[in-house]
Image 1 (spheres, each protein chain N blue to C red):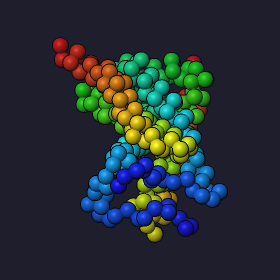
Image 2: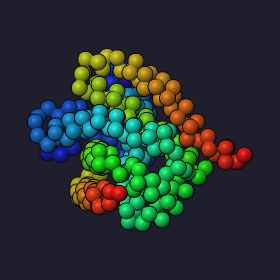
Image 3: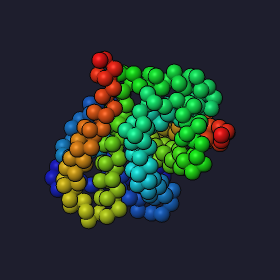
Length: 127
Length: 137
């Protein structure tokens, strides 16, 4: 156990779905490093949960189309990143039919969250 | 190799999952996986709670009271720690994966992760937790 560690998830050698997923995980990671940390800082350091409410989001935060688009894109990037990550976890610990079933459930959950999250971003009226 | 990675299969069972295999890489990987799953779970909760802003604003406001309670603040601090570690170590992985030559500096990168984690994380934790003892006054 000496020398430089090898990557737990080495770059797939051939072009195809695995390489696309591998690169997508890393590119989305860089985007989330900025977006998610800025989002957490905004909601916990600049503002405090005690000062926020549904009305605050409706009238202040999401009254801006730009912030709404930013949060919507963050929703997609975080879902791509986290569900690709969970795909790796599932493939590490589960095999065969169980793996197929859990992966299917995972994609259904991801689709449901896209619908749920997009619904509120798109339908909440601008004041 | 239609599915799965080129790595050997993980050892089965709890002992296999927690067995220490040595080095910073092992610890970094274990923390990365645990924090990643934790943040994923929170993302699910968070999409549902934000849905309530449109669907049931009163329920969302009730939930925010739980988030800003002392127990909620402890949970948020743990969430922040998981998110921050995952973000910092993730950049270490990106650096080594996209520029493999820099893997030679993995130990330095690992130190930078932890120095940054505590240098920015401790003041952050203080800001989140501070209202707990201010409320008690």
